[in-house]
Image (cartoon, rainbow over all chains, first blue to last red; front, top):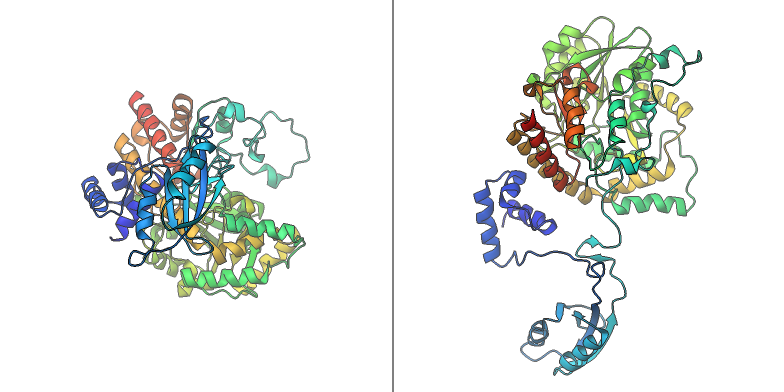
Length: 163
Length: 410
């Protein structure tokens, strides 16, 4: 990792569709060097995935997102890692973090309906050994996702000509 | 994003002062000074644009980022707390101290916040103050050409005579000793420069400035240095003329928050000069402006205290867009040197057989891309067009695509 790698990562984080040619022009590298660096970043597990941020509500989707707080008893020898691994494997779980404060795990769960979320949390998560308590918050409205404000159009109104 | 200006009429595309139509009935009341100011070079383009859809504008001289939110909040806070009265004429003490420290840190210039710095309502006001503080009727003022459009009018309003100092493309738009010696006369009082340069993106490094400093001293000239684009320097570091010893006592430095912190509409800048000149400028400022808007000064304080990261991100983005856009221009056959500063590319259109004005007009009509003809910035700009790359990468790529089609069609 050097400064050029960091620059590549910062650009990709804001626009993962950009091609190696443009990236190279922007950063003063040849396309093949950009390609080599990207492959190395992928192989080392730093660059994980190329994705898109989607406002599903705007697309008319009725899906439900829930923020679930979990209190967990850590296991001797494994700590939180083994139970985290079991939770993370469910495709319904979009993100999972161990946090400081009054609970241990913060989990983001998605489902088609509230009922589906309820069944998943009680059936699959709460029933796991070591889970002491769950608190489920249903998301009412998402204002910002991955640095992208969903309720506000980006850009600035400017005069078309100014000196 | 391409904009439908036909629909946008009356919203953000409000007319500017320079757009008053030629047909307006003229009465006898207008002063000779006001009357002597030439009309804006792009009025025609404004009018054209208002009839058009799907336009990508590269004609914009301001960043396309929002003001960093913590900076905006500082302005909002001052309103909410009722801190909305006048400040001292010079501007808030805290802000002047922060400006002084910032200039020393970034550009190694030393200005006393008590009697060498005035907070102005944008660099535009600073220009006017500076010129009026030192220019008498009959004085000649050398204006490095191409330059921002207000320089010559400011000189004329002060009763001085603007004299264009050619800084053509072959000199990379810099002031050279030869050009300076050719234009300087006994009447020359002041030299006005702007680096990084609008419209060309040219810069003057330490050696370039040293090369003209003896001439400035020998002819007892003053130097007005508009450094509003100083943070947008992509190769090496910006050099402030006031950091060069023989020039310090003869230099008026102008700078501000508009470009570096995306704060154009807040209107905050500053004038720095040796105390005798600053005192004269302050007299004018106190009678024509009183003080710079208070909420904007509080926002500027926050910009200097807590927006360095935001500034660095914006500068990095401009640098990448510059590389992308200039490579695109060269690819489609519009030769363009890599501009070292500001956010403008200034390619030559001479190879197309069109004048800069024809090029800009036809590009707008045929491909809906707005650029500014170089002649609007002076004789040395003739044959070039100014393209602001302060637009999203997506818009820049689309603009290049359309310009490529336009060039093919010629």
